[in-house]
Image 1 (cartoon, rainbow, N blue to C red):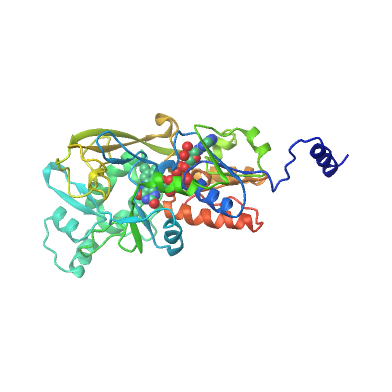
Image 2 (spheres, rainbow, N blue to C red):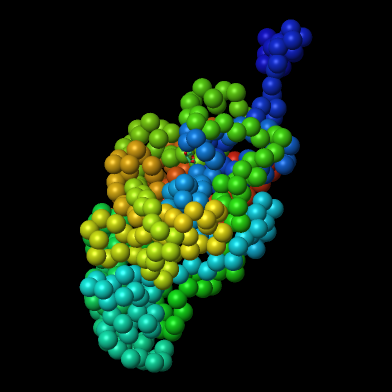
Length: 407
Ligand SMILES: Cc1cc2nc3c(=O)[nH]c(=O)nc-3n(C[C@H](O)[C@H](O)[C@H](O)COP(=O)(O)OP(=O)(O)OC[C@H]3O[C@@H](n4cnc5c(N)ncnc54)[C@H](O)[C@@H]3O)c2cc1C
């Protein structure tokens, strides 16, 4: 008896026989990657089953209102910014955005105040006690202190070539040592290449972003609305098991690709962060910006005053939460994977490529999102890639995992 005959017999016997296109699609992870895939597929008429082992949706963008009445991003501050009109327009179906332009300062040692990062005219004047007035003067000053390197081989050389050793050692070295647990010399230049140097007074972190802001009711509510569709079934507190694949036509996995293969080739390194929350009087001030980087503290990289973000004081209680970030190895934080580690030697990228080779033999699975593709991806990139990937799959294309780990 061939398969269609067997199906017909089961059907006559009253058994539910599902063909591949009837069976639901499994989405592992209810973060942005999972939620976008689920919504696109559901709107195209597919049934979708979304699971997440955490007790909530929205993945690392999850937020909640805590006992002080302040909305806190549970896995660290998430600032939405994008140049993609398509991504922005798609998200507007699920939220409106409160205007917010992110700024970051560094608290200097010895009570010398706060300076903006990325480096701008004010940073240079304060750190070096200068009174440079024009962009040309700032550029000329930085050129004098820079240590030219023709082909920077790592993050230290890249920074030295742009801002010299004083600013590198003051603003970047302590941060990066705590953040990545390695010296700048051992870090790939790509990590700092994204950090611009400015010669004017621009102090916005994302000055060129066409759209930026905070979702009016938070990220979790935005994702909950994406998943709110009659064809989508969401189960939180449920971890992926291989047996689930049998009941589903296909699987989009935003879980970590090394975990999928039982770490057969060894674990892909990630950095994680332990968050330390402190309750403070609502009127206390800790700096001029939501995010302040702490160069002096031995373990904390930054603090975040949530109350300074628009719409984040949801109930006035007279108190607020301020959160300090303590980066750590992923093994020291319950395998909460936050940042793929871009090592200078390229070993991690090579290991990821070996997992991609294993994935090529895996049928009916696509690895998506930040951990699926072992890339640092901002939220807008995840949304954009997930829209592409889900639509491509609906058109019949077989998604292949990205070959390169870093975005
Ligand atoms: C500290 C920090 C700050 C950030 N700040 C910003 C920012 O300011 N702006 C910005 O644009 N982006 C920011 N990001 C990036 C943003 O978090 C990601 O782009 C986005 O969350 C990626 O979505 P994702 O769905 O790929 O992954 P995730 O959000 O990590 O979701 C994956 C989900 O899969 C679940 N999962 C994993 N394995 C399994 C399993 N085996 N079974 C069931 N479920 C599983 C996890 O529990 C998780 O909820 C930040 C990230 C971090 C860590």
